Amino acid sequence: MKSTYNFIKPAAFVLLLTMITPSCKKFLTEDPKNVVAVTNFYQTEQDAVFAVNAIYAWLNSISSGSYAGVYLNSFWVTAGLASDEMNNQEIFSPYYDQTATFTYSSQNNALQEIWYTHYKTITLANIAIERIPLIQMDATLRTRLVNEAKFLRGMLYFDMVRMFGSIPLVLKESEPLTPSISSVDDIYAQIISDLSDAESLPLNYPPGDGRGRATSGAAKALLAKVYLTRGDYTNCAAKCKEVINSGEYALWDDFADVFKLSSRGGKEAIFSVGFGDAGGAIIFWEVGQFNVRLLPTALSAEGVENAQGWQVPTQDLYDSYDANDRRRAVTFVTEVHNPDGSITSIKPYIQKYWDRIAEPKANGTANDYPVIRYADVLLMLAEASNELGNTADAYTYINMVRKRARFDGTVYRDALPDYTNLSQEEFRAAVLKERRWEFVAEGQRWFDLARTHTLETLVPIAKPGVTPQTKHYLFPLPQREIDLNPNLVQNTGY
Image (cartoon, rainbow, N blue to C red):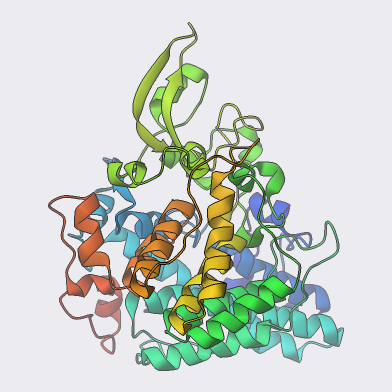
Protein backbone atom coordinates (compact mmCIF):
# COMPACT_ATOMS: atom_id res chain seq x y z
CA MET A 1 0.00 0.00 0.00
CA LYS A 2 1.44 3.37 -0.97
CA SER A 3 1.65 5.35 2.23
CA THR A 4 4.02 7.76 3.87
CA TYR A 5 4.28 5.75 7.06
CA ASN A 6 3.00 2.41 5.83
CA PHE A 7 -0.32 2.37 7.61
CA ILE A 8 -1.53 -0.98 8.83
CA LYS A 9 -5.25 -1.42 8.25
CA PRO A 10 -7.20 -3.75 10.57
CA ALA A 11 -6.87 -6.74 8.28
CA ALA A 12 -3.14 -6.26 8.02
CA PHE A 13 -2.96 -5.82 11.78
CA VAL A 14 -4.43 -9.26 12.29
CA LEU A 15 -1.70 -10.68 10.08
CA LEU A 16 0.84 -9.03 12.34
CA LEU A 17 -0.29 -11.21 15.20
CA THR A 18 0.98 -14.24 13.32
CA MET A 19 4.42 -12.64 13.11
CA ILE A 20 5.13 -12.04 16.79
CA THR A 21 8.59 -13.40 17.51
CA PRO A 22 9.58 -16.00 20.08
CA SER A 23 11.56 -13.30 21.89
CA CYS A 24 8.38 -11.40 22.68
CA LYS A 25 6.74 -14.57 23.95
CA LYS A 26 9.61 -14.92 26.41
CA PHE A 27 9.27 -11.28 27.43
CA LEU A 28 5.53 -10.93 28.08
CA THR A 29 3.39 -13.51 29.75
CA GLU A 30 0.29 -13.33 27.56
CA ASP A 31 0.99 -14.80 24.11
CA PRO A 32 -0.81 -13.56 20.99
CA LYS A 33 -2.90 -16.07 19.06
CA ASN A 34 -1.35 -17.76 16.09
CA VAL A 35 -4.33 -17.11 13.84
CA VAL A 36 -7.34 -14.88 14.31
CA ALA A 37 -10.07 -13.82 11.92
CA VAL A 38 -10.72 -10.16 11.18
CA THR A 39 -14.42 -10.53 11.91
CA ASN A 40 -13.95 -11.67 15.51
CA PHE A 41 -11.02 -9.50 16.58
CA TYR A 42 -11.32 -6.51 18.97
CA GLN A 43 -14.22 -8.25 20.71
CA THR A 44 -12.86 -9.76 23.91
CA GLU A 45 -10.56 -9.00 26.80
CA GLN A 46 -8.04 -11.41 25.37
CA ASP A 47 -8.13 -9.56 22.04
CA ALA A 48 -7.27 -6.35 23.90
CA VAL A 49 -4.28 -7.98 25.55
CA PHE A 50 -3.08 -9.33 22.21
CA ALA A 51 -3.44 -5.92 20.59
CA VAL A 52 -1.10 -4.32 23.12
CA ASN A 53 1.30 -7.25 23.02
CA ALA A 54 1.63 -6.67 19.29
CA ILE A 55 2.93 -3.15 19.96
CA TYR A 56 5.59 -4.46 22.32
CA ALA A 57 6.51 -7.16 19.82
CA TRP A 58 7.38 -4.61 17.16
CA LEU A 59 9.93 -3.03 19.45
CA ASN A 60 12.11 -6.11 18.95
CA SER A 61 10.54 -7.90 15.98
CA ILE A 62 12.64 -9.74 13.41
CA SER A 63 9.60 -10.06 11.15
CA SER A 64 8.95 -6.46 10.16
CA GLY A 65 8.99 -7.09 6.42
CA SER A 66 12.13 -5.56 4.96
CA TYR A 67 13.16 -4.09 8.30
CA ALA A 68 13.97 -5.20 11.81
CA GLY A 69 12.18 -4.02 14.96
CA VAL A 70 12.37 -0.50 16.35
CA TYR A 71 15.25 -1.15 18.74
CA LEU A 72 16.92 -4.13 17.13
CA ASN A 73 19.82 -2.24 15.56
CA SER A 74 19.43 0.88 13.41
CA PHE A 75 18.17 3.16 16.17
CA TRP A 76 20.88 2.67 18.77
CA VAL A 77 23.62 2.18 16.17
CA THR A 78 22.72 5.48 14.49
CA ALA A 79 22.68 7.32 17.81
CA GLY A 80 26.18 6.01 18.55
CA LEU A 81 27.73 6.53 15.13
CA ALA A 82 26.40 10.08 14.65
CA SER A 83 28.38 11.23 17.67
CA ASP A 84 31.80 10.98 19.29
CA GLU A 85 31.01 7.48 20.56
CA MET A 86 31.46 4.97 17.71
CA ASN A 87 32.92 4.38 14.26
CA ASN A 88 31.77 1.89 11.64
CA GLN A 89 33.54 -1.22 10.34
CA GLU A 90 30.49 -2.86 8.72
CA ILE A 91 31.70 -2.93 5.11
CA PHE A 92 28.40 -4.07 3.58
CA SER A 93 26.42 -1.20 5.14
CA PRO A 94 27.85 1.99 3.61
CA TYR A 95 25.02 4.02 5.09
CA TYR A 96 26.59 3.46 8.51
CA ASP A 97 29.86 4.90 7.18
CA GLN A 98 27.87 7.94 6.13
CA THR A 99 26.29 8.17 9.58
CA ALA A 100 29.66 8.01 11.35
CA THR A 101 31.16 10.72 9.13
CA PHE A 102 28.09 12.97 8.94
CA THR A 103 27.90 12.53 5.17
CA TYR A 104 24.46 10.93 5.25
CA SER A 105 21.61 12.16 3.08
CA SER A 106 17.88 11.60 2.78
CA GLN A 107 18.70 8.32 1.00
CA ASN A 108 20.25 6.75 4.11
CA ASN A 109 18.78 3.28 4.64
CA ALA A 110 19.12 3.33 8.41
CA LEU A 111 17.06 6.51 8.66
CA GLN A 112 14.42 5.00 6.40
CA GLU A 113 14.26 1.96 8.68
CA ILE A 114 13.93 4.12 11.78
CA TRP A 115 11.07 6.08 10.21
CA TYR A 116 9.30 2.97 8.89
CA THR A 117 9.47 0.90 12.07
CA HIS A 118 8.50 3.77 14.35
CA TYR A 119 5.42 4.69 12.34
CA LYS A 120 4.37 1.07 11.92
CA THR A 121 4.52 0.59 15.67
CA ILE A 122 2.75 3.90 16.30
CA THR A 123 -0.03 2.64 14.03
CA LEU A 124 -0.47 -0.43 16.23
CA ALA A 125 -0.65 1.82 19.27
CA ASN A 126 -3.27 4.00 17.61
CA ILE A 127 -5.39 0.96 16.80
CA ALA A 128 -5.20 -0.25 20.39
CA ILE A 129 -5.98 3.18 21.85
CA GLU A 130 -8.99 3.60 19.57
CA ARG A 131 -10.49 0.12 19.72
CA ILE A 132 -9.84 -1.22 23.21
CA PRO A 133 -12.23 1.27 24.90
CA LEU A 134 -15.06 -0.22 22.83
CA ILE A 135 -14.53 -3.75 24.20
CA GLN A 136 -16.72 -4.99 27.06
CA MET A 137 -14.13 -6.15 29.60
CA ASP A 138 -12.70 -5.52 33.04
CA ALA A 139 -12.55 -1.73 33.33
CA THR A 140 -9.28 -1.62 35.27
CA LEU A 141 -7.47 -3.82 32.77
CA ARG A 142 -8.96 -1.87 29.86
CA THR A 143 -7.61 1.40 31.23
CA ARG A 144 -4.23 -0.14 31.91
CA LEU A 145 -3.88 -1.53 28.39
CA VAL A 146 -4.82 1.78 26.79
CA ASN A 147 -2.28 3.57 28.95
CA GLU A 148 0.41 1.05 28.06
CA ALA A 149 -0.30 1.81 24.40
CA LYS A 150 -0.11 5.53 25.14
CA PHE A 151 3.24 5.08 26.87
CA LEU A 152 4.62 3.28 23.83
CA ARG A 153 3.21 5.86 21.43
CA GLY A 154 4.67 8.69 23.48
CA MET A 155 8.06 6.97 23.65
CA LEU A 156 8.14 6.43 19.87
CA TYR A 157 7.11 9.98 19.03
CA PHE A 158 9.78 11.23 21.43
CA ASP A 159 12.38 9.35 19.37
CA MET A 160 11.01 10.72 16.14
CA VAL A 161 10.56 14.38 17.05
CA ARG A 162 14.09 14.58 18.41
CA MET A 163 15.53 12.98 15.30
CA PHE A 164 13.41 14.55 12.57
CA GLY A 165 11.67 17.61 14.04
CA SER A 166 8.33 18.49 12.43
CA ILE A 167 6.66 15.28 11.25
CA PRO A 168 3.10 13.96 10.83
CA LEU A 169 1.36 13.49 14.16
CA VAL A 170 -0.79 10.44 13.43
CA LEU A 171 -3.19 9.63 16.25
CA LYS A 172 -6.04 7.74 14.59
CA GLU A 173 -6.36 4.35 12.96
CA SER A 174 -7.66 5.93 9.75
CA GLU A 175 -5.83 9.01 8.53
CA PRO A 176 -5.17 10.60 5.12
CA LEU A 177 -2.50 8.83 3.12
CA THR A 178 -0.59 12.10 2.85
CA PRO A 179 -0.94 13.79 6.24
CA SER A 180 0.37 17.25 6.95
CA ILE A 181 3.24 17.78 9.33
CA SER A 182 2.70 19.03 12.86
CA SER A 183 4.80 21.53 14.75
CA VAL A 184 7.41 20.34 17.22
CA ASP A 185 5.43 22.00 20.02
CA ASP A 186 2.27 20.10 19.08
CA ILE A 187 4.13 16.81 18.95
CA TYR A 188 5.67 17.38 22.37
CA ALA A 189 2.27 18.35 23.78
CA GLN A 190 0.92 14.97 22.62
CA ILE A 191 3.94 13.12 24.03
CA ILE A 192 3.45 14.77 27.40
CA SER A 193 -0.27 13.98 27.30
CA ASP A 194 0.33 10.31 26.49
CA LEU A 195 3.03 9.87 29.12
CA SER A 196 1.00 11.75 31.72
CA ASP A 197 -1.88 9.33 31.19
CA ALA A 198 0.61 6.47 31.49
CA GLU A 199 1.66 7.70 34.94
CA SER A 200 -1.43 5.92 36.27
CA LEU A 201 0.02 2.54 35.25
CA PRO A 202 1.01 0.11 38.02
CA LEU A 203 4.33 0.76 39.70
CA ASN A 204 5.12 -2.93 39.24
CA TYR A 205 3.51 -6.22 38.27
CA PRO A 206 3.24 -9.56 40.09
CA PRO A 207 6.37 -11.73 39.77
CA GLY A 208 6.40 -13.56 36.46
CA ASP A 209 3.55 -11.48 35.10
CA GLY A 210 4.51 -8.58 32.91
CA ARG A 211 8.28 -8.10 32.95
CA GLY A 212 8.96 -5.63 30.18
CA ARG A 213 5.61 -3.88 30.41
CA ALA A 214 5.39 -0.14 30.87
CA THR A 215 5.00 1.07 34.45
CA SER A 216 4.26 4.30 36.25
CA GLY A 217 7.97 4.68 36.96
CA ALA A 218 8.82 4.28 33.28
CA ALA A 219 6.30 6.96 32.33
CA LYS A 220 7.65 9.38 34.93
CA ALA A 221 11.28 8.72 33.96
CA LEU A 222 10.56 9.24 30.28
CA LEU A 223 8.57 12.37 31.07
CA ALA A 224 11.60 13.65 32.96
CA LYS A 225 13.71 13.18 29.84
CA VAL A 226 11.09 14.94 27.73
CA TYR A 227 11.14 17.91 30.11
CA LEU A 228 14.94 17.94 30.19
CA THR A 229 15.05 17.98 26.40
CA ARG A 230 12.62 20.88 26.38
CA GLY A 231 14.63 22.83 28.95
CA ASP A 232 11.85 22.53 31.54
CA TYR A 233 14.16 21.81 34.44
CA THR A 234 11.57 22.30 37.16
CA ASN A 235 9.28 19.57 35.84
CA CYS A 236 12.25 17.35 34.98
CA ALA A 237 13.51 17.51 38.56
CA ALA A 238 10.02 16.89 39.94
CA LYS A 239 9.50 13.76 37.85
CA CYS A 240 12.98 12.43 38.69
CA LYS A 241 12.25 12.83 42.39
CA GLU A 242 8.95 10.99 42.00
CA VAL A 243 10.85 8.06 40.46
CA ILE A 244 13.46 8.14 43.22
CA ASN A 245 10.93 8.52 46.03
CA SER A 246 8.90 5.58 44.76
CA GLY A 247 11.54 3.29 46.27
CA GLU A 248 11.16 0.96 43.31
CA TYR A 249 14.63 1.45 41.82
CA ALA A 250 18.26 1.54 42.90
CA LEU A 251 21.76 1.29 41.47
CA TRP A 252 23.54 -2.03 41.47
CA ASP A 253 26.58 -1.67 43.74
CA ASP A 254 28.87 -2.88 40.95
CA PHE A 255 28.56 -1.48 37.43
CA ALA A 256 29.37 -4.98 36.14
CA ASP A 257 26.09 -6.25 37.57
CA VAL A 258 24.02 -3.91 35.40
CA PHE A 259 24.52 -6.04 32.30
CA LYS A 260 24.44 -9.54 33.74
CA LEU A 261 21.62 -11.64 32.38
CA SER A 262 20.48 -12.25 35.95
CA SER A 263 19.91 -8.49 36.30
CA ARG A 264 17.37 -8.21 33.48
CA GLY A 265 14.27 -6.55 34.84
CA GLY A 266 16.13 -5.84 38.06
CA LYS A 267 16.27 -2.84 40.33
CA GLU A 268 18.08 -0.53 37.88
CA ALA A 269 15.94 -1.37 34.84
CA ILE A 270 13.14 1.18 34.46
CA PHE A 271 12.14 0.24 30.91
CA SER A 272 13.94 -2.24 28.69
CA VAL A 273 13.25 -4.14 25.49
CA GLY A 274 14.04 -7.87 25.48
CA PHE A 275 15.31 -9.91 22.56
CA GLY A 276 15.35 -13.56 23.68
CA ASP A 277 18.33 -15.85 23.39
CA ALA A 278 17.65 -17.46 19.99
CA GLY A 279 17.72 -20.83 21.69
CA GLY A 280 21.51 -20.71 21.68
CA ALA A 281 21.56 -20.80 17.90
CA ILE A 282 23.71 -18.52 15.78
CA ILE A 283 20.95 -16.32 14.43
CA PHE A 284 22.05 -12.76 13.79
CA TRP A 285 18.68 -11.10 13.73
CA GLU A 286 17.10 -12.45 16.91
CA VAL A 287 19.83 -11.63 19.40
CA GLY A 288 19.72 -7.87 19.50
CA GLN A 289 22.98 -7.90 17.61
CA PHE A 290 24.91 -6.57 20.60
CA ASN A 291 27.50 -9.32 20.49
CA VAL A 292 27.41 -9.67 16.71
CA ARG A 293 27.95 -5.97 16.15
CA LEU A 294 30.23 -5.05 19.02
CA LEU A 295 32.52 -7.94 19.94
CA PRO A 296 35.75 -8.45 17.92
CA THR A 297 36.40 -11.46 15.72
CA ALA A 298 39.68 -11.92 17.60
CA LEU A 299 37.68 -13.38 20.50
CA SER A 300 37.27 -16.56 18.45
CA ALA A 301 40.51 -17.57 20.19
CA GLU A 302 38.48 -17.77 23.40
CA GLY A 303 35.72 -19.80 21.76
CA VAL A 304 33.46 -16.84 21.04
CA GLU A 305 31.23 -17.40 18.02
CA ASN A 306 29.49 -14.93 15.74
CA ALA A 307 31.44 -11.82 16.81
CA GLN A 308 31.85 -9.42 13.89
CA GLY A 309 32.98 -6.13 15.44
CA TRP A 310 30.95 -4.00 13.06
CA GLN A 311 30.73 -0.94 15.30
CA VAL A 312 33.69 0.14 17.42
CA PRO A 313 34.26 2.83 20.05
CA THR A 314 36.33 5.84 19.15
CA GLN A 315 39.78 5.78 20.70
CA ASP A 316 38.97 9.14 22.25
CA LEU A 317 36.04 7.60 24.13
CA TYR A 318 38.22 4.85 25.57
CA ASP A 319 41.04 7.23 26.44
CA SER A 320 38.68 9.63 28.20
CA TYR A 321 38.10 7.21 31.10
CA ASP A 322 40.15 7.23 34.25
CA ALA A 323 42.16 4.00 34.28
CA ASN A 324 40.46 2.97 37.54
CA ASP A 325 36.93 3.75 36.39
CA ARG A 326 35.05 0.46 36.78
CA ARG A 327 32.96 1.37 33.75
CA ARG A 328 35.99 1.21 31.44
CA ALA A 329 36.86 -2.38 32.34
CA VAL A 330 33.22 -3.47 32.08
CA THR A 331 32.43 -1.59 28.89
CA PHE A 332 35.47 -2.50 26.79
CA VAL A 333 37.59 -5.50 25.91
CA THR A 334 41.21 -4.78 24.97
CA GLU A 335 42.87 -8.17 25.12
CA VAL A 336 42.32 -11.75 24.04
CA HIS A 337 43.31 -14.74 26.14
CA ASN A 338 44.74 -17.36 23.80
CA PRO A 339 44.51 -21.13 24.36
CA ASP A 340 48.26 -21.32 25.03
CA GLY A 341 47.94 -18.88 27.91
CA SER A 342 49.34 -15.87 26.09
CA ILE A 343 47.50 -12.58 25.83
CA THR A 344 47.05 -10.56 22.66
CA SER A 345 46.35 -6.85 22.97
CA ILE A 346 43.73 -5.43 20.62
CA LYS A 347 42.17 -2.03 20.13
CA PRO A 348 39.11 -1.39 22.30
CA TYR A 349 35.80 -3.04 21.44
CA ILE A 350 32.53 -2.81 23.35
CA GLN A 351 31.74 -5.86 25.49
CA LYS A 352 29.30 -4.52 28.10
CA TYR A 353 26.33 -6.57 26.91
CA TRP A 354 28.26 -9.84 27.00
CA ASP A 355 27.75 -11.92 30.13
CA ARG A 356 30.87 -14.08 29.93
CA ILE A 357 29.69 -16.52 32.58
CA ALA A 358 26.14 -17.04 31.35
CA GLU A 359 26.94 -17.06 27.61
CA PRO A 360 30.65 -17.91 27.15
CA LYS A 361 30.34 -18.34 23.38
CA ALA A 362 28.41 -15.08 23.00
CA ASN A 363 26.36 -16.63 20.22
CA GLY A 364 22.87 -16.03 21.55
CA THR A 365 22.76 -13.08 23.89
CA ALA A 366 19.50 -12.60 25.72
CA ASN A 367 20.46 -9.19 27.08
CA ASP A 368 17.92 -6.39 27.02
CA TYR A 369 18.15 -3.04 25.29
CA PRO A 370 17.99 -0.47 28.12
CA VAL A 371 15.67 2.31 27.01
CA ILE A 372 16.00 4.02 30.37
CA ARG A 373 17.60 2.94 33.63
CA TYR A 374 17.94 4.39 37.11
CA ALA A 375 21.40 5.91 36.58
CA ASP A 376 19.83 8.03 33.85
CA VAL A 377 17.29 9.43 36.30
CA LEU A 378 20.05 10.35 38.76
CA LEU A 379 22.08 12.13 36.11
CA MET A 380 19.02 13.91 34.73
CA LEU A 381 18.20 15.17 38.21
CA ALA A 382 21.80 16.29 38.70
CA GLU A 383 21.69 18.20 35.40
CA ALA A 384 18.32 19.80 36.08
CA SER A 385 19.30 20.74 39.62
CA ASN A 386 22.45 22.46 38.35
CA GLU A 387 20.38 24.50 35.91
CA LEU A 388 17.98 25.46 38.71
CA GLY A 389 20.81 26.53 41.02
CA ASN A 390 20.13 23.68 43.45
CA THR A 391 23.76 22.72 43.89
CA ALA A 392 23.18 20.39 46.85
CA ASP A 393 20.97 18.07 44.80
CA ALA A 394 23.19 18.44 41.75
CA TYR A 395 26.25 17.13 43.60
CA THR A 396 24.31 14.48 45.51
CA TYR A 397 22.98 12.75 42.43
CA ILE A 398 25.96 13.02 40.10
CA ASN A 399 28.22 11.73 42.86
CA MET A 400 25.99 8.69 43.44
CA VAL A 401 26.86 7.59 39.91
CA ARG A 402 30.47 8.66 40.38
CA LYS A 403 30.78 6.62 43.60
CA ARG A 404 29.50 3.48 41.90
CA ALA A 405 32.17 3.92 39.21
CA ARG A 406 34.87 3.77 41.94
CA PHE A 407 33.77 0.33 43.11
CA ASP A 408 35.82 -2.48 41.55
CA GLY A 409 33.60 -5.30 42.74
CA THR A 410 35.40 -5.63 46.06
CA VAL A 411 36.51 -2.23 47.32
CA TYR A 412 36.12 1.43 46.47
CA ARG A 413 39.25 2.57 44.70
CA ASP A 414 41.10 5.77 45.45
CA ALA A 415 39.95 7.32 42.19
CA LEU A 416 37.17 9.39 40.67
CA PRO A 417 36.71 11.72 43.64
CA ASP A 418 33.35 13.37 44.15
CA TYR A 419 32.73 16.53 42.18
CA THR A 420 32.90 19.71 44.26
CA ASN A 421 33.15 23.45 43.73
CA LEU A 422 32.40 23.47 40.00
CA SER A 423 30.96 26.45 38.23
CA GLN A 424 27.58 25.93 36.59
CA GLU A 425 29.25 25.60 33.19
CA GLU A 426 31.88 23.18 34.54
CA PHE A 427 29.10 21.08 36.04
CA ARG A 428 27.32 20.96 32.68
CA ALA A 429 30.49 19.56 31.12
CA ALA A 430 30.93 17.10 33.99
CA VAL A 431 27.45 15.62 33.74
CA LEU A 432 27.80 15.28 29.97
CA LYS A 433 31.04 13.33 30.52
CA GLU A 434 29.40 11.09 33.09
CA ARG A 435 26.60 10.35 30.66
CA ARG A 436 29.18 9.50 27.99
CA TRP A 437 30.98 7.06 30.29
CA GLU A 438 27.80 5.55 31.72
CA PHE A 439 25.68 4.92 28.59
CA VAL A 440 28.04 3.63 25.88
CA ALA A 441 26.09 1.89 23.09
CA GLU A 442 22.76 2.55 24.79
CA GLY A 443 21.43 4.83 22.06
CA GLN A 444 21.95 8.00 24.09
CA ARG A 445 24.95 9.91 22.78
CA TRP A 446 23.63 11.70 19.68
CA PHE A 447 20.58 12.81 21.64
CA ASP A 448 22.77 14.17 24.43
CA LEU A 449 25.05 16.07 22.07
CA ALA A 450 22.11 17.43 20.09
CA ARG A 451 20.25 18.43 23.25
CA THR A 452 23.29 20.26 24.65
CA HIS A 453 24.29 21.78 21.29
CA THR A 454 27.78 20.28 21.45
CA LEU A 455 27.89 18.23 18.24
CA GLU A 456 30.18 20.69 16.42
CA THR A 457 32.61 21.03 19.33
CA LEU A 458 32.90 17.46 20.69
CA VAL A 459 32.67 15.25 17.61
CA PRO A 460 35.81 16.65 15.87
CA ILE A 461 37.85 15.90 18.99
CA ALA A 462 37.01 12.21 18.76
CA LYS A 463 36.90 12.07 14.96
CA PRO A 464 39.54 14.39 13.48
CA GLY A 465 38.42 15.66 10.10
CA VAL A 466 34.73 15.05 10.84
CA THR A 467 32.89 18.29 11.52
CA PRO A 468 29.12 18.27 12.02
CA GLN A 469 27.17 21.27 10.81
CA THR A 470 24.13 23.06 12.15
CA LYS A 471 21.88 20.90 9.96
CA HIS A 472 23.01 17.79 11.83
CA TYR A 473 20.94 18.71 14.86
CA LEU A 474 18.16 17.00 12.92
CA PHE A 475 18.33 14.09 10.52
CA PRO A 476 16.91 14.37 7.00
CA LEU A 477 13.44 13.04 6.37
CA PRO A 478 13.78 9.90 4.23
CA GLN A 479 13.47 10.76 0.55
CA ARG A 480 11.10 7.86 -0.04
CA GLU A 481 8.62 9.39 2.39
CA ILE A 482 8.88 12.80 0.76
CA ASP A 483 8.28 11.23 -2.64
CA LEU A 484 5.11 9.61 -1.30
CA ASN A 485 3.81 12.59 0.65
CA PRO A 486 4.01 16.07 -0.89
CA ASN A 487 3.05 17.60 2.45
CA LEU A 488 6.38 16.67 4.01
CA VAL A 489 9.03 19.39 4.16
CA GLN A 490 12.69 18.41 4.14
CA ASN A 491 14.81 19.68 7.02
CA THR A 492 17.05 22.64 6.26
CA GLY A 493 20.38 21.79 4.66
CA TYR A 494 19.35 18.48 3.11
